[in-house]
Amino acid sequence: MKLFKIKDNAQEKKDSFADIEALTHRIADKTLEQLEREGVFVFPEFIGNSKDLTRDQIILQSVDDTYRSGNVMGFLGCSDERLIIESRFSSEEEDYFSEYLLNQVLDFPNIVDLKSDADQNNRLFNFLLFLFPYYLKTAMRKGLFKRYVRNRYNDGNVKGRIDIARHIKQNTPFIGNVAYSQREFSYDNSLTELVRHTIEFIKRKPYGGHLLVRAKDEVKLVVEATPTYELYDRQRVIEANKKNAIRHAYFREYLALQRLCLLILQHQKHQIGSGSRQIYGILFDGAWLWEEYVNSLIGDAFYHPMNKRGKGAQWLFAKNNGGNIGQIYPDFISRNNESRIIADAKYKPIGNIGNRDYLQVLAYMFRFDAKAGYYLYPEANGTDDLLLWMNKGSTYEANVTERDDVSVTKHGLKIPVDAQNYDAFVQQMKVNENEFLRAFDIG
Figure (spheres, rainbow, N blue to C red):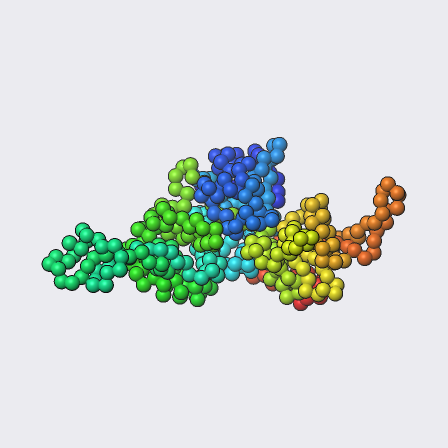
């Protein structure tokens, strides 16, 4: 196996990718949407609604004689070539920061990491399994999925279409029953059966019980809703779901769950990435993971509008004929409305925060009458906060001076890069988190 590792938000010479030339050729300058169509699994699933991760984002962008990576972490493969994109805080051997983010945000088991090993395909498959509880819980926020199914009966209570051939076969001589089928709106359909087969598949894994307990209520509902489940029906259920993907936009969460279940169940029949030309892999949006992780730290003191779920939408303007216009989703709005703070989570090095980032936060501050704004970013060097005072005046009038009442601050959370093991990394992170929270009087 030929393997190459890079870090997010980094540039590498094109010559460095010589060992994985075929894979690089297949993914370079391709958008997330293109890779997703070719079999790469992207998390979170609704990238079209993410302000940091969009469908036209390029994972490996060609810049002169280098390739530049973005905010995405994960695995990509083609044939016997593998590319691992680690966080920029990883060491040569371990990427504890990626593991920590996944554990804090998605409650992943601690056995997950991005280090290379002899069986990268199985590691990739484990990632898909570990994502299942999250996708199941997300989809079932809208309740159990119902769809029309055609059930076959053979009794005396005829309510649907009579099946002549089946009736003759089953009811000769006639004893009072009639073979018929009826179209019914049911929870027990091909999609819920697919989810049930995936649940039963995971149960057979050594860590399956521990994994499924994270969505035990949802698992219980699915099991109760699929009384016709039979193990030998698995291939038929898989084929039915491959032919009938969820199309209604309202059930887009179930479409993502359907796709994940198919990837998991088909892995055993033909390993992920089988075929010399197929691209496969799983990619995580580092910006989304970072934002959700920050929310777990400061959520008690800040509102957190979520554009991916359409919750907490704010509006810039009111129209003179009624209604609002200019929908926005600031990352964080402080609950303290006397001294309002606007905070923006940025999975970027401090030097890359600027230009449009400034304009965005200042617009939010103006909208909410906030005098203080914060950029919350991860960093490794223990850099002091960078406090920026807003200017007033104009260079045309030669009267530019700084204001003393409006400011934005680049406030970093230090990420350990020299921890001896994962437990030591977690302990140091807890210390650094407390230091990080002191800026907001939290902790």
